[in-house]
Image (cartoon, rainbow, N blue to C red; front, side, top):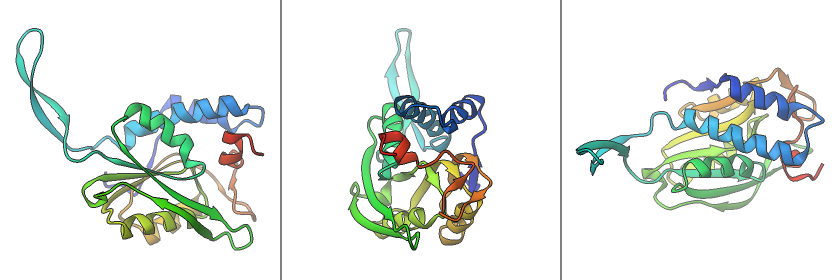
Length: 210
């Protein structure tokens, strides 16, 4: 994956995202749609996983069949909203190792504050996919990637549902080696650092805390 930004415009992704954006969409439906979209986005972000072959027996004859190569990939959720993407991807890749980065945004400075960090071992030998529904200012995402690199990660991808141009630029400046996969590039950030038109606070809508 060489492009810094991959905008996934698959019809199913875009349709489900529109439903998620609607104010009238309930918490339960929002959560289900996020799970479904995360699986569709996972196809894109894992498109170039390394492969090898394995000798197997089919009912008709032996063959050398393709299988994934290397260590199990690591999924890292940027708490708390990242967990909504994490659940769907784990259904698709149940053997993945899982980590968590706890960051919250100081509402006055819009800067991230770390409160938790627990990730799998041997990150340097794994593909690491960091997940967070929103790439807004980019501050939290950049801070999370900083922490993952300090923990040894070398091959990182960032998966999000919505991205703002400001967040994309911030990530490209800080981590040009980390490709971004998103379902939408929205217009801009408002004065509170929220993506417009966006879908509101993903964590609040997912967990019913709005």
